[in-house]
Image (cartoon, rainbow, N blue to C red; front, side, top):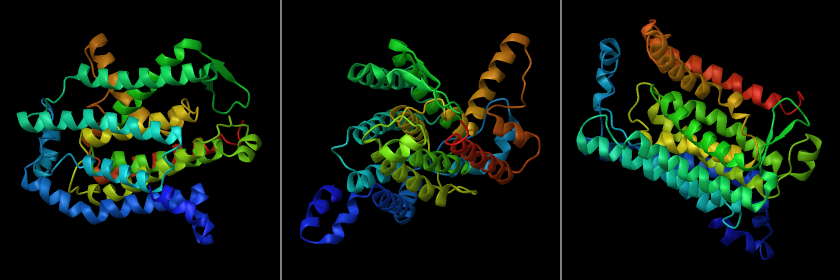
Length: 362
């Protein structure tokens, strides 16, 4: 919005010419989203607390975890709602709304946020942990995946290829199965972030690292010279996703201001599903889907721990972990919550650096 209004004024005042630089607008998007969350956060949290917008964080059959989280029962949830608003406003102000990559990412976030909001709202109205049925949320994620996959494949069958990290020329063509791949990436990432959102600051802290990494990849992919030099697929216009990623990182950092231990507010599904979906959409649009397994290593660990736990229990009757997702396992091992979170942040930083290393180690 501001970009569209102010940039044409460069003909009258040369200073507005700076808005043509994606890096400059990305910085503004980050700062605006951060300040929006930090400044309005106390008002939103107070309103949520007055409305008693919270729910239990205990787990049936795990008395020790319920005891650890007893003080969180009065902490308001649905904080992801104002994170979504911060991202949306920042993108509208500093993004190029004529760029299709940018608009696809923004629309995808809004779609997933609606399902997350409905899930949280139902939990609150029923005063229990049952929100939307799992299959309803899955259908919403799959609908987005099918729509995006079909759109991209029909736009150009060349989208139906997968770049393999650490290999310069190793590209796999998947044909119409590309639609299935898009669905798997969106549903898998959305739910992985949702599973990670179990400790104060854990999910949003890792999100900042992942989104900043993908912001850089978006910029490089949309830059003809850098893309050629680094052997990346050049996608004209995809650099605008850097602004989107910066807004998401800024809003996540601002939310972390209040979500850090001890948390004053929780994301809720409104935020966690949206964050995961946003990361997945960016990865798809810049053709770095498999890179998610590296950069989002913490999210992969959390999701994999649940899969292994369920599979092990069904096949052998035994649990591999004391509790899944795996961050709760370490809590039951005696680690303090802050120690679990900080150590997972360290792992997140390492995974992000490993992702950046794929730019040259090929």
